[in-house]
Amino acid sequence: MTARRLPWLLLGVLVLAQIAYPLTTGTTRARLTVAVVLLGCLLSVGHALLTRGPRAAAALALIAGGGGLAIEALGVATGFPFGSYDYSGQLGPQLAGVPLVIPLAWTWMAWPAWLAATRLLPPGVGRIALATAGLVTWDLFLDPQMVAEGYWRWLGDGPALPGLDGIPISNYLGWLLFAALVMTMLRPLGGAAVAVPDAGDEPMYALYLWTYASSVLAHAVFLGLPASALWGAAGMAVVAAPLAVTLLRQRSRPPVVPAT
Image 1 (cartoon, one colour):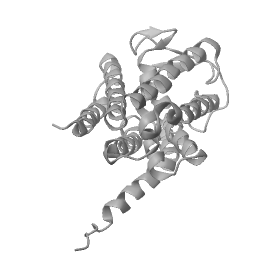
Image 2 (tube, rainbow, N blue to C red):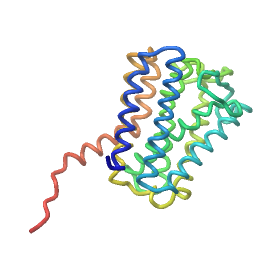
Image 3 (cartoon, rainbow, N blue to C red):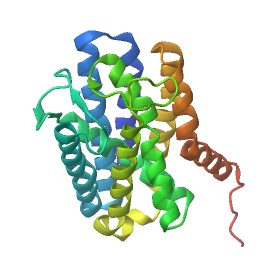
Image 4 (cartoon, rainbow, N blue to C red):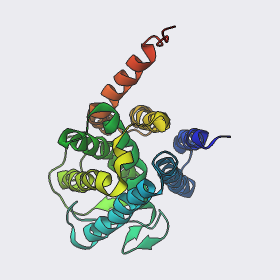
């Protein structure tokens, strides 16, 4: 097996684990949740290492993982910037009130969101904004699902999106703040290679599109969360729809025949 095929293998295992999620309950589901996040983080950091090198992988882990732990610890302790919340003990070991798996989730989805934006837009503010949106809108699926499972809870009564009662809008504003910071810092800390699409990025595009499509289906059909299915479908489509169209157009182009 070549190194470039490893992300596809990890993606396949991740997909199988996520398919199994609705079939489990209780402690088994919580453990499967942790396993999925670990696989996702390994996939993203491993892909960054294989395609962009150690600097890019280290930057991703430091900014999204280390930064994610720091801002989550701040959030649990002070309520800023997400709102007042706390975690249950179902997601494994904690540090400063934050399950260690949580910053790995930031790392998991930050990388495909960044690469999708890199594929769609040239360097600049627009790319950073699109990558930020690509990560933030994922939480329209994530938070309702995890709150429904009891993995964390919100402690205030702030305004919420229609149908997503109990999850304050401040949560999404906090995501927006941190996601923008991650996407702004990734290029200068990760090096020039992270700013250029790579031929090996297709597993990450597939990861982003799979996350979108499977989340819509799971929330609408298997998890009984129709409101988050609608919000997530509309939100993540900002990145997922143009990415899918771009990839389909690329595949439909006739091959270039060299002149003889």
